Amino acid sequence: QAGLTQPPSVSKGLRQTATLTCTGNYYNVGNQGAAWLQQHPGHPPKLLSNSNNNRPSGISERFSASRSGNTASLTIAELQPEDEADYYCSAWDSSLTAWVFGGGTKLTVL
Amino acid sequence: EVQLVESGGGLVQPGGSLRLSCAASGFIFSSYWMNWVRQAPGKGLEWVANIKGDGGVRYHADSVKGRFTISRDNAKNSLYLQMNSLRVEDTAVYFCVSFDLNWGQGTLLTVSS
Image (cartoon, rainbow over all chains, first blue to last red; front, side, top):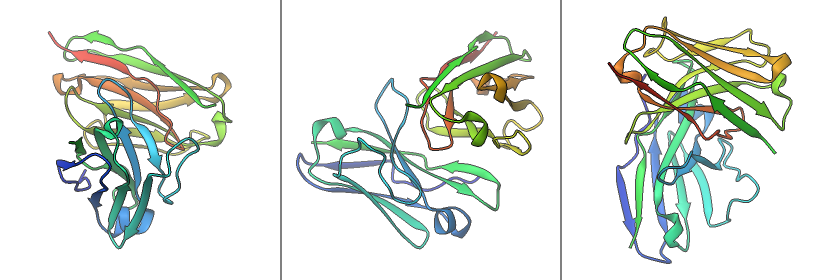
């Protein structure tokens, strides 16, 4: 099944702001919205934002999600060393009747 | 608090079968969709299958269709993945994922001769 498109890597400095993107199509991101997940090595993914751009309780306000058309974005403000991780977007694709993921973006905090 | 605990992973030869289980707690299990997602070593996330709360609707990824079957037992608050005709490329950590994207710790399946 076709997936969502994410840049493989992003590097930003400590306390800077990083914006990660995720591009799909009308049937997934455009119509269903995208969720964002954070994964540290050796750990399961953790939900940062659901497809309605809402943060679960306990997730820092530094993480904010948005969508414009078929592209979803995750903005991480005031980058901290612990933000260094892999970030995945995901969405239900109503045409494929499948859940699709992006390939992941490795965020490096310099 | 939602808790998902997977079990059943292990080493299997190509062509073999295995059943994964996921014990769920902390929410009304029978009311919600549940998913299996896998991650091959060093790779990204791949959705495998999902199933509606009452078990009446289920979807499988093309890569596993005809070989894997998702099921659930709402009386036991449990989710299952029956995997047949296993291939080397099925080697991955398999995660049980709830409707609201809570993830279990995963169970490792290794398919190798």
